[in-house]
Image (cartoon, rainbow, N blue to C red):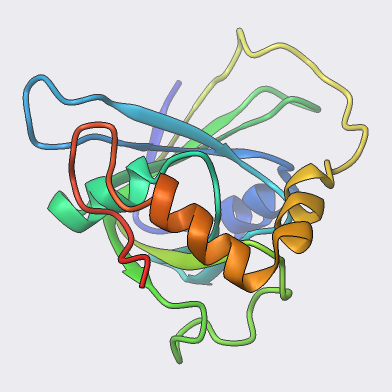
Length: 179
């Protein structure tokens, strides 16, 4: 049922581009550390080439993925079909945290209030599987709550929030230098 692809092939890229949500998984090296899985959406993903994906990291209540990637680089992205034929696609790889104005990603994303970094994923495994048990859902639209919240806080308020909430992970790993 599953297939390992040599890269993010054009049909896989096209399918990924139609999905409205994806999930990011990461974990620290520590045996007792917390595995993290985060949902992502809001047109924050770009396929840079057949082995490279980037997504816009938005301010949130934590910074686990960034802390884990900074520590060990391991990251997995997953998409699953909530509409149409069942399918799951995973990109396993090594992540890299860059500024939103990094030359490799500058201009690729809309100016979304609350953007704090870009995560570039260098794929070392691309695979798909059936997804037969994933339920069907109907897409209703994007939520605006994060954009509204970030815009209301403003740049200085976001720096203050990140200093308080995004400097270290729940396992005590450094995430963002809030300065």
